[in-house]
Length: 378
Image 1 (cartoon, helix red, strand yellow):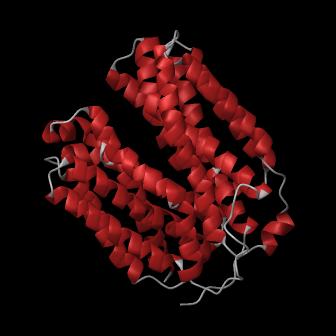
Image 2: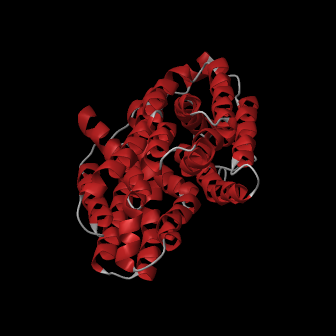
């Protein structure tokens, strides 16, 4: 039963992570096939991210009411259906619309996966493993999809992964237990949730923004080739697979969490000022390792902050990172037209990332023991 439960949250996280990276893996191939520019291809991912961000809290409320298994399975089926339609309808406008529909599915599946992991384990370490699953799936998509033939590869692979995941989730053990009536939607007016949202927005949201522009930054300021810059840039995301599970062990160690934000800010600052490739490698690795540590503490604490609506609270925290990515990515891009070729944008990110150390609250081991979730039942 435990293996099946673990497979269920793994499938939910993997589908969400795969869909974030699948189009970018073969952006040029897709643009050539549809006869559109790379800017238009970018909307394939933007459309997904918009609905994914908007629906984080509603998806959480549905999980709190109906259970993560039902919501997650529904999300996977939506993603599978939308992806199959894209693969069978060769029209760019339709594809963008359907990617927005797929974003509905990823919103449901990602929040449901986090809630299912919480309900079946109750530990921050498993939350970290769940977060690593989504990142790992995105990395695998970047490696495998270019090896597949044709413009349909990103969408057919997403449909197959989601459909297989839906079968696993629908047959997984049930976890839903009655919850106290929620006192309204979670919001940033809840002091704790505001802190955890800031932590996740800085560590994950800003790391994705950095990953979007680090290749261009290194190419321009360090004179590296695209291949070399890409390999260095990948460190900002891939290394989070290691530290997301590790961060679960530091949930009650605020000093370690604060240090992770200071080190992350330092890494981004080094990227912004260096013209040395060895220093860029060190800085990118520092960013990637630091970015993963706050994931599990932010999600686990958010769920405890609103015990009557834990999934909705996690959805709010994750929405903060998605909105950060949507807003900050183009703003940093604009700084590449200023003197310094993006250095200013990276230095601003560094300052914000490091300042987020002030948002880390002091925690209590007693509170951790008393906040374990109730026993689940099918």
